[in-house]
Amino acid sequence: MRITRRRFLETAGLTGATLAAARWPRTAQAQSPRPISVSHSVSTFIYGQHLVAKEKKFFEAEGVTVPSFLVPGGGARVVNALTAGQAMFGLGDSNHPLKATEKGRETLILFATDTRCSYANIVARRDLWDKGVRSVEALADQKLVGRKAVIAMTSVGSGTHVYGTYVLKQTKAPDGKSVNDHVEWIGGGASTTILGGLKAGKFDAIMAVPEWQGAAESEGFGRVIYDVQDEKAWTRVFGGAIPVTVGYALRETVEKSPDLVQAYV
Image (tube, rainbow, N blue to C red; front, top):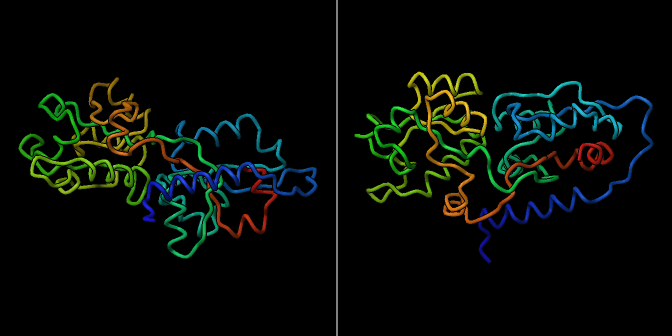
């Protein structure tokens, strides 16, 4: 049977759910919570599980503590931090633990937090939208855009990059090639720089988490051209629900510190 990426992710999601449901044996909790290192790319509600757990002291309730989150500004940097030993646990795109495993650092998905990618939205500059760039297909029209469209993701290899290129590859341009063949990708960084770049005209479109999408539209310098809340648009590209944002850890962490893994989950 041919294993597609979608099939693999569905299986990985089920495996992760099984791991999350399993009750690893606990050791007696010490009087003082034990510190664990935890990372996510940017502090938005996409990674609200981390933020809420810290604010509500859910970590301490499980006998661990998170002094501060490692927030490197891109999902690819999160998995790099994990494999380098700078973080025990990461929360990010389901593609990242797969890539880490491919590179020889076996990484396990512990749980999935959503089944539709909230950072696969694409927001175009308002002036381009006014000129007619009102769809993903229109990004391939250099006459309409005025140049080869420059699309910003947070960083190379990040979840915004992975999902953005997938959306563009699944969308055909008028010449029959994918829209992705007609654009240039560039790292835009976190909220301040990526929104600033769109507003200043440095980028023609950006990959956007809901907060960025809302900011661009409310401030009048951007309009959404691909919205993951549009079920038809999502299904056309991705076919349905898939595990998107996941918690993950190195296999060695799971094997050596099952009590800490259980506390994190």
